[in-house]
Length: 292
Image (tube, rainbow, N blue to C red; front, side):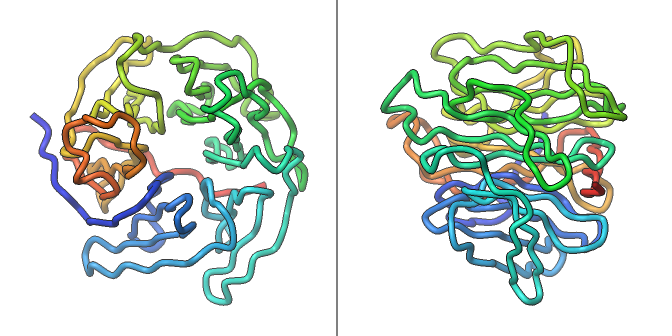
């Protein structure tokens, strides 16, 4: 049985993109909106720092040389924590209603980012987003027809990329060339049955297990590298958004959550927006720093 605790009552409207930093032994994450914020929390001291953002923030990565790379609504920005200066690196090629969302680095330190078409779900066919790879200072489209990007993760050996378009109810896998970042061999990795929640964020462990937050079910689930469901862990909230391993030994699975009403009668809604810690018995992988 996994041990689950309330780590921090963060009161996030849309907590997302948790990431452990070995450099400062802290967990970082974002509140995407209402209000947009970047968070850092030190479990040992309890120190909790918050940086307000000028627009919606979809995610971030740490840079090898220091500082962060942020995915704001309309572009990729370098961010200096001390001066709080934002410097545009790559503008989004998408229309204003499609915001950059969900990002991460592959094992080589190459940056990938998705998007969220805000005409969805009012328009169920809205799919004006895409997944991008950052090549130099430009975003290169690699997967088209995205409504809400989620599920981004990379296998331990760096040769498989996982990602999802949430309304499709499936996570796809791609072979990724470590040298060029070229994707191939597109295939279905896992699917959710109708009515079984919604795909959100993900991470992997050292054994290649894929951990997925399933919104509206109050669960995180571990899938084996062949796509078979291995285990399901119930959380005290109904809307977990993304898991990430952390702690000095990388054995704690942290999970953010959202106060957004996904399913009105969901059990545990009163704890939505908090940060949770889970002892799973598995070990995570330190995320690669942005190096390109």
